[in-house]
Image 1 (tube, helix red, strand yellow):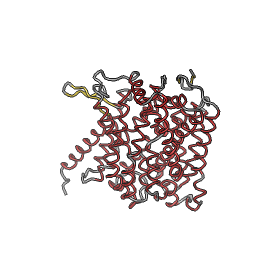
Image 2: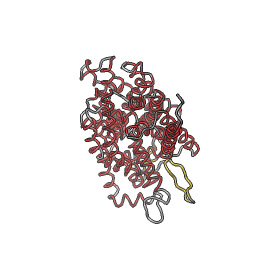
Image 3: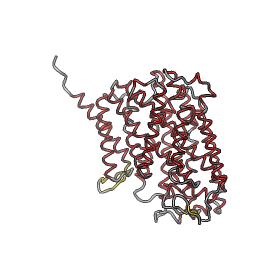
Image 4: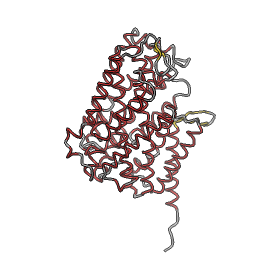
Length: 499
């Protein structure tokens, strides 16, 4: 048995050789160089240092991405490297419950089809770059604008940290010691984003997707054959997974958390700065509608990725760190050269979304938090670098589990922007003050409950003798909307001042 950096064991596996590292470096470095050089081959005239044109070119790609580029870009920043690491890890640890990511991606695309073209039209007509811009235009409130911008900024920071952790995980699996993998990940991301802007991930997102599709399709073909077929694989995995005595996929009490986590995740998914940045960079509202129809192809890929957790059990992978499941599985089954390719696919799968996340965060700072720098590309670049440094600090000085916990909180926080951004598009006429009070109530309630529950994503409710675990983010959203409605009603009933 071969020991691995994670402290896990891959039965029958060997520590990766030099060929795996060579293949990894070849593909990873080529992607970085291609993305970083985009400003040169596009021509320096397209990326000026200042002015609205330069800011839009670096931060939104000039709002000129067509259907295919948008498809790769949005899919690339929605399905991250941490998806490839975390979803199989959750399936490995919990079994069928880990598949909740599948229904939430199915729910989210009708939402994208209906809502995102409307947001794109508002942003295009008003030259808005962020969700906070749209909210400011709708409600005319600086305080609400800052609340939405702040929520997006703090929600995306741990998300970037998780991409760095994803890159570190696969580089560490190649045998590099200490924090070298993390430093390599940070420097690569910094150069890639600084030089290329949004064009870098847009250009290389198709490379990332092709590499991941190749790795996953090879895995779901070769690994089951290696293990005796899918029937033998599922039977072997079932012996290692907890499962209900009545034979159902979900244990008693898991149905409600499964459904509510899927719903809250779907509502939050396209509120993040990085996913919204990909949408606003599209050429037209029709481009977004076409993507909403095409993007479910990624859900099929996600289902195949989730099955890697089952394959790990069938392959005899034993680990106390579930995040190492996928690297260990690849090292156990595949030859060195293909393991290096798969690790490069995961690393590039982190590079693309992390770059979009940093750019989305920079857009929030320069457009909303410090609007005096709205059209200064150099400030946007420095801000994006500062955001990545903050994410690096999270990884260096906080353990990986805490970064995961922060990402769970980030999902809760970003969900509280839903009423102002999405309900603000409807005929519901809540005032800016009521929206702000609702946001504050939902954020405070969700944060307190989440910390009280030990940073778990669900909260146990007692209803008429029944105990139901419900998504904390969804509960906080209900508090948010309810508080906003009560505040708006109180304002409406308030007597008018005497003349």
